[in-house]
Image 1: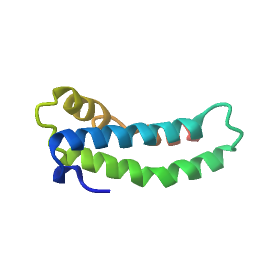
Image 2: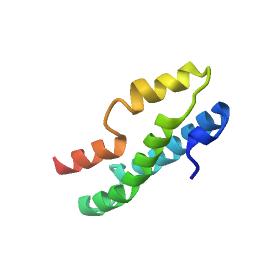
Image 3: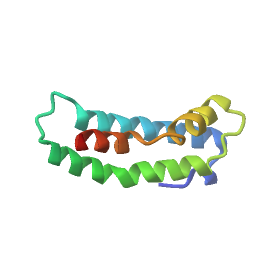
Length: 95
């Protein structure tokens, strides 16, 4: 995966959003209450995705959002400011 700082702003924003949506869909499918997987299997699956989320966050920090204030705020005042969805799901499994 290329760092977004090497892409034009429009491509960077689109690529980040696409990666974020795909990752969140995978997390949701793992944490789905109807999933029959035991908590330890869910934990292992989430731990595999954690480096991917960390890479996504790193790329978002390096992205030049240009004039796209909405995307900038989504990342810098939302996703990057708080714990990631994977980290929160892992904490939920601990409870």
